[in-house]
Length: 331
Image 1: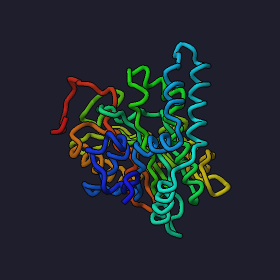
Image 2 (image 1 turned 90 degrees about the horizontal axis):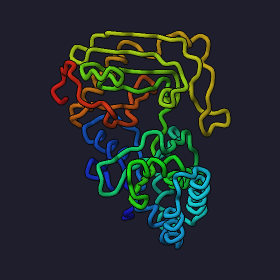
Image 3 (image 1 turned 45 degrees about the vertical axis):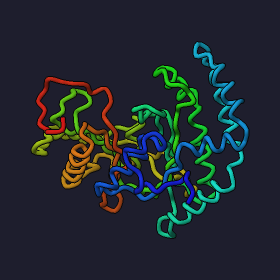
């Protein structure tokens, strides 16, 4: 059995160190019966294995040690060199064979696309995410493209923005973990984010949803105008419902591989992206996830063929304590 590739269903919160927060969280969601797209995780040690077998450890360590964070151009240059070393390194035969075997075992003719996503963390630490630091690749097709995107995922541990993030948090670069995830692609009709506390007012008695047509990338990136819903957490009564004219969405590109931005069709621009029933279903799922983890959660979700999929759940950042009413037992 290969020790570098694990099914998401076999992961849980005990795997933060080797699989990062996203993968560990998805495994935990699967354990409690939440619908998560099937997939697998390439554990953090796989990158170390790649670096070791290619004899790159000393060179990468030297470049990392020389980073001068007062000189952005030099940081960009040196991290770019590290990314190039990783991207051009030969993947050990046993690891590449396992990656290809796992991919073939995951996809079918009906579900042939996958997403390749980065799951990050820090060794010997509770830090389990760096929001916005790493990339996700959608509509990846075929073994060769999957391997290529896994390489890009590994290399993204060394983007300049990721290096600066570690430096700001006083995290040693060698303790950074990146564990790529390969999951079946959800070809979503609508998607977005849900918060089990209002991230603006910090009211933990509210649930907030933002949604748009297509993939959730338009919502997460902040590039779109989104429908907005605020509900009372205890009763799920709608406190605010704002349907906007949505102008941009993210979908599969014209080549049938990868994603692109498109204008929202005129007949859908002013239509609600979620039905009342879908809003209620999302809120119920959000409360269930919050109950399990014991803290307010930020959830990425998508609907395909009227079926809800959860793509990520993590603790809401910078929420803090608030004197406002807390109606939820776990808060």
